[in-house]
Length: 244
Image (tube, rainbow, N blue to C red; front, side, top):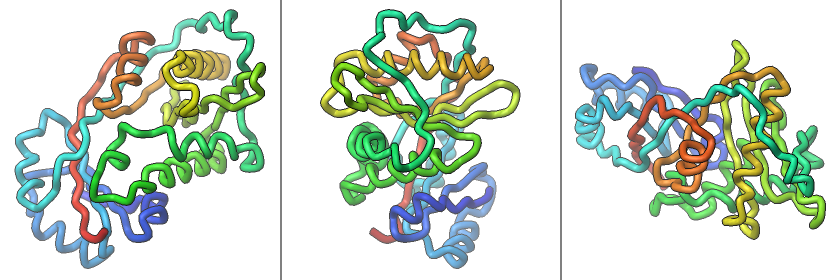
């Protein structure tokens, strides 16, 4: 097992946030926890394990880690572009710098409601929005990541956004996507996803991978039901709050 400090989450939480990687129930977890507590004095620690290891979660529960989310990893091979000829009222363009990011950051602040941070009753209600805003800002400042905005040209309004990270071997990791709260339930999420896949295909990407909460039914239905993503793995996420 190893411990990873999450810098963005730590800044948002105002204290050290850690993630346990490569969980191994055969190791001495008490000693492992004592060591990282002495080194980091954490505020929040998470551990994600495959559902194939679900019986090992009893060790985490013994140490006051609590189940907080079921997460899925899914992928899709890109073979052809989506037909977006009927969506001429929209433009899908990259954001180059933070001066053009205000509308996207505002969407990121309020659009997410099905993730483990927004659902956790022991966390401040604004943690989730601040966290996602920070991750969008990171994508703006990363050479291998991109932020796109979907603009309704008729209304002159940014209605959605997407972020992704380019990987080797013509692959990409889809990071965040959100729709303006005023525009949900109108199919904007589908349009947003179509445009992103087309942009990635034009850039030479041939495979994309994404992660999402199993509680996020709109995304589940969109990416698996509508767009044909294949589930590769399912995880249980546990967390322990040391200090609020």
